Image (spheres, rainbow over the protein chains, first blue to last red):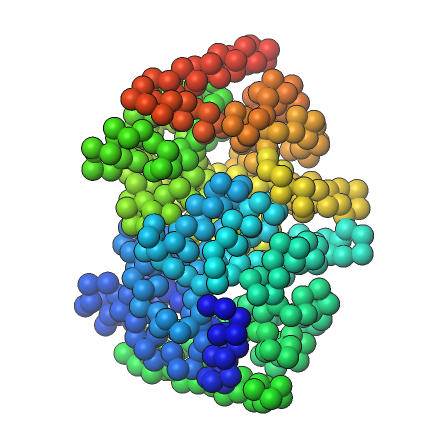
Length: 275
Length: 275
């Protein structure tokens, strides 16, 4: 999916919401266990209930890998159930030496090899250029590189400073030599409104994937105030606050209500930039 | 597997070799395609041919993920074929916010959940403490944290300097507050002999997992000169130079010959510390 297609979708749905499918088999409603694959059934119902309100789904691979073969099959089946007009994110935080990153790229971007054809994958920057560029060798696919994350541990290393810039600023500046805003996004946690000012100094045009709204406590208003650009430039993810809105049989309906609340707030923010 | 068990194995086998199962279906000998699962058959024959010469097997998850369900099944089946007295490494480079890293830990450390029970997993440090500590909640399991890697991209960020220390030194110093040398190892590329001096300043006791000997050009002698400690403190991995020693039907025999050469060199180095 290219940049124009993402922007057009934001305009037509008046939303820049990504729904995070961090589906934990121990947290889904009990009535789903009558289905052959409860996790897949949960995901399908969440997708059916939210697809007109969001522009993207983010699948967190950890929640699937932990269930062995069944889990990996659920990952593939969930990917294949995603509406093709939504932007799909493999939230996998991969990254290794070049020949290995090339294999991870095949895992998420080459359906002939892996049965999955995601639009994007999240990548960890620690190993530098040759760990990232193999993911850039696919048409209309995106790297979403970790920059400034939303967790407490982000203070351990991302905020170290070399010369004029912090470490996460070096990551953005250096990686922008590898791909421009038509191929590269950055992960920036919603828990730091003012952090977006530092990000936008170095990445004025890039889309930012923003986790941490909802369960992790980030404010959408703050994110938009400091992070939005003329093309919106934001994909805001919410996982737990939406998918676990109810533990009962009404989980999908309640997930829709939560997604709708976020979408309405997003619609107001988008009107400020004429979308 | 605890530290004493690793050391005892090094002493009895006179080896600190890890064989890397970076098994690429496009590189294995053609005659194996008569088997139902050629990758698994390749791995089994490599393991049978090398297990008395190495103390560890490192499975690079990327080479399995890229083959979809079949690949993930090969990963599990290969894990389960490993001799239980060898130190097993899931070379997965994982790391995410706490609740997600906990799921990755289950994927590699909790056989009830995932059918895999590795001794260790490689972890990327960028997201800090809460991305690493969930892997430390399992008895006799190890985190192998990326410190100074062997690839060209390691110069992009790992060598940045904040104050007295480089970024990779901050990673080692900070992470040594989370676990000691009985639970934490570091990845240090073999392509930089002198780099081991900087590592050993901060991690005198930890075992180091050293990729890059062989195909990537690192010298075992240099690694030992600068990196060995009184307990050996090194697990040196070789992947391509061993497993692809021959493209023909003699691949396992030739892999054994290559492993034997490395083991003999290791035996000499070990004699210097009385092992």
